[in-house]
Image (tube, rainbow, N blue to C red; front, side):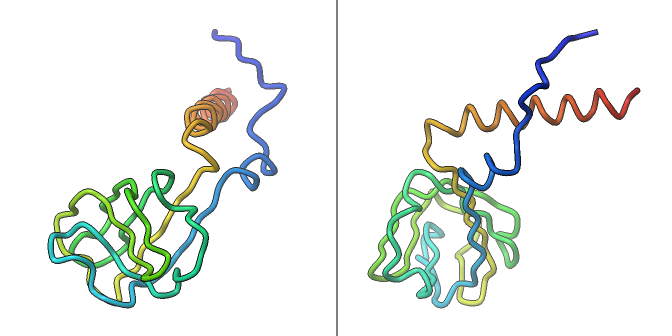
Length: 125
């Protein structure tokens, strides 16, 4: 049996402090090269997106594909990423998942994995 330190499991507060999720619907067609999406609702927001956000497409031809955002233009609401399998057109639902900083991602994911393993161990009893 493996012993784990479960005295400080990942708490709800920790997740709230480090995780941002944005659900949206594209307002214009992204690049024909399948490398962007456009949502005018993002215009004027501070750049919480570049190099920190995973873009998950929720429907359409590229449903359930995900890429890391490369750039964000807050004047147009365009997010660029490596090519998806299809162009992201207007009306496509998407989700942005952002950890507070790239440095934190490894620590947070390790905590989540440990917590899930502990939950699995508890349910096996």
